[in-house]
Amino acid sequence: MSNKELSPITTVRLGDHLPLLEILPDSNPLAWVRGGEGLVGWGVYATKTVTGPNRFAEARAWWEKQLENFVVTNSVHGSGTGPVLFASFSFSPNDESVLVIPNIVVGSKKDKSWITWIGSEQQPILNSSPDFVQNAQMQWSNKTDSESKSESEWKEKVSTAVGRIKEGSLAKVVLARDLTFRSEKDIDPRPILLKLASEYPTTWTYCVDGFVGATPELLLRLSRGMLTSRVLAGTISKTGDDSKDLASAASLARSSKDLAEHEYAVRSVADAIEPFCTSINVPDSPFVLHLANVMHLATDVTGAIAETLAHVDAFTILEQLHPSAAVCGTPRPAAAELITEIEGMSRGRYAGPIGWTDAAGDGELGIALRGGEIKGNTIRIFAGCGIVEESDPEVELAETKAKFAPMRSALLDSSS
Image 1: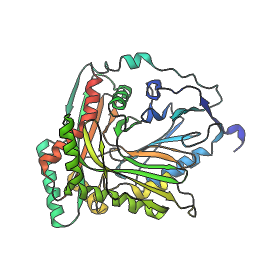
Image 2: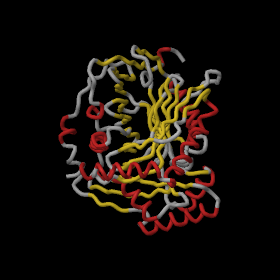
Image 3: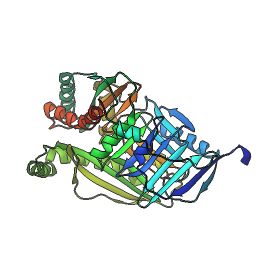
Image 4: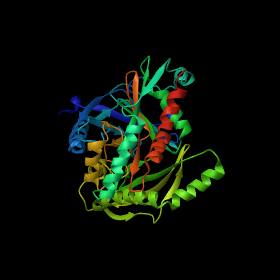
């Protein structure tokens, strides 16, 4: 291919720190933002859906093929600069995963901001969208909600799962449920993103091809040979009373049921990344992560990628890491089989990896939790719980309601 047939892609530094979510247009917004830092994108240079057990390898092959079409000018350098791919993978290999290369990406990290665009045009002009920001609470004129399974049906599934665990076929399984909201007009994800970012600033706020949410769980960050994964398992609701919540946090940190569930999730991540690393750091005990509505047991697992290995990128690790025990169970094959048997719904891209990767293979991908999939005037939101031998169906149901709260609140506050 001659240079004349290549698409120029340019990255330059920006002088000002931009409010990333406020500059998103209404067409195909893409986002991965935490505490005002991250990446946003829009426009579609190329997109691809992949499915099947080899979807991560197929995604890598397609991305590498697309990179051959670019001639890159990058005066900023670092993770997230140059060509960027946004990805939203399905939980199950049977559902579609979506890959998007945007026409424009804007990034911000610490004191550095940059813009990347594809094409020979001059640098795009960036403006916030004051009308969108001011009218963020005027999205819907009407909405209703429904669920694919009733609460009593879902509690029966939890009881079934506990029975299987007691029989000894597995130690943990994660079961999810859903709610669907309908509006009289198409749903704009941007007000939802703004609300989630405001209420949950320590989470990763995301949007890829209509899947929008705010996840507290970082599946992997790969940057210059260092790998990080934040594991969450074990949850308790907040009351809003500081003294009560402090006591609840202490109770969560001592709970044998929650600690056992958490250990399964941590071990599954450590085992998955071990073949790629010369060293791994797994803290002896989890910390309690405080969010606006719940508290989680959390552990940050880190590792150094072995320099002797051939090129290891985010896709390489995803192939081994997904699904972790945090969203599937332990042992993974038995848990996945039980989910297929009794959950009674397609998760789609819920609980799948979501985020971005760059041309160097670095990237950040979280688990698509506390979110939902927009299709026109509907949004289907999800919540799940880790079921172990000591699980009580009523308590697990209450946990799903707490996990629905971020999206329900964002939807309510985005309506008229």
